[in-house]
Length: 427
Image 1 (cartoon, rainbow, N blue to C red):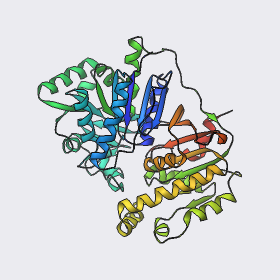
Image 2 (cartoon, rainbow, N blue to C red):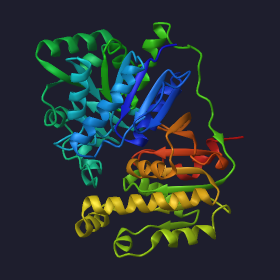
Image 3 (cartoon, rainbow, N blue to C red):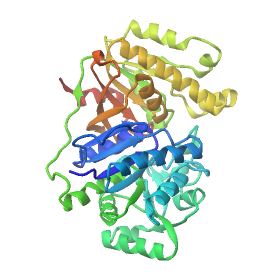
Image 4 (spheres, one colour):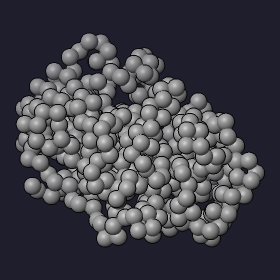
């Protein structure tokens, strides 16, 4: 089988999220962490290249994304997908618009769609406005995001600030009329000089119709939810096994731990639920800045508890506390201190025998994977929409495989950290 779908994700948990959607819809998918090397993985229908490009300088985001694209092009992919967050995390500078522009230029395509909707996680778009849990994006808590505060729910306006191309809208009236109507509306926008179209979507059925309308697009951009409508296109062309289903993730022998760096409302609720049932250690950014050896303290704390039950190490905090820390230390410095500490602690935990690990937060997950030297993930079944278990092989082969759930900060039910272990199948 040829390489079908080549994907570029702007953060690690987003890549895992996308990979899980593709696997659940019948595409054998491998996730590569960072710029890949070597050939296309044998047997893979899709590869997701997970970068850390969401919040880096625009030039770096564009450069890394184009490098990933070149590898995917060399593999002969039939279609390309640029994945960003379902809450459209970005700023007036980017990075969604500049990266999408660069990918379009490199692929020689003049038009694409942008749809971050993920109804299964209550992210919907109507009349171009993004709603999260039933409220406008800028009222959902995302206005307090420490790195990409979202102050406008109108995605046409948001994207137009970031791109040199004209941005239009495929309204829900067209989406609700099916794939042919979506395709015609896209053609009309192209004639009007648009290079992008924000596409409304309020249901999974809408995503399927949008996916069908985009069957011949060279490049598609969106959140992970939109990807559920793409495997059907390859299946209709006889390029995808019609009976393939996701495999259950295996549970390697080892202890259980949760690392939480996200400060989103969903993760705060999950941390509270976990703390009510299991031991928890908090990583304090101010203590790190003042020279306290928090990593050693956490390691000593964990050594006395790991193995008896799941443990939690977290830096999650409420918005007002995050803002106070950022005002004292600076946004970038405070984030780097916490990410480095959590990554170092995780490496110590794995050395202690942790073999089943949940990590919450895209930036935290990226730091942890770099510390562990993980370059590739095999995707299993989902725990909650957008969050599958995965299996990683560590650099030190004697440690065996590691079960990983890399959770976007905004995803998962309040009891996610408590129930996830039940989705693993013992080896």
